Amino acid sequence: MCTIVIINKGEKEIETPREFKEHFGFLPNPNQGINHNTLELDYCLCQFDVEETFKLKNIPYKKDCGDLYVGQLDDVVGDDD
Image 1 (cartoon, rainbow, N blue to C red):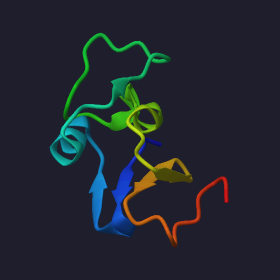
Image 2 (tube, rainbow, N blue to C red; image 1 turned 60 degrees about the vertical axis):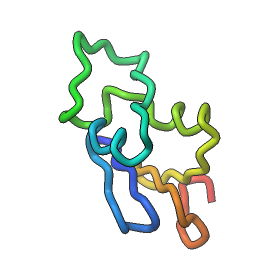
Image 3 (tube, rainbow, N blue to C red; image 1 turned 90 degrees about the vertical axis):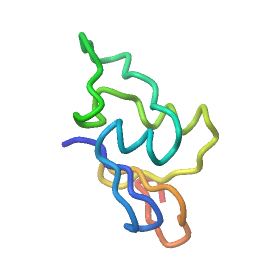
Image 4 (cartoon, helix red, strand yellow; image 1 turned 60 degrees about the horizontal axis):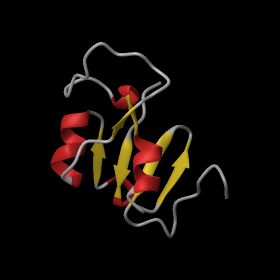
């Protein structure tokens, strides 16, 4: 299952690198564990390490069932909660 970034508890869902760049203004870091010949902006986010990107950019997030939540996190129950 591919990663989905959920903004403000469902206000917006980001499923592609292009949508990620449109929202955040930059692309996530390529996933070093998976060898892709070319990075496709309209494919899923699995070709990128979104979690590592959030950590490097100091973007608070929570992870739940493989999805990453950003924005309003108060009522989001993450895997670590």
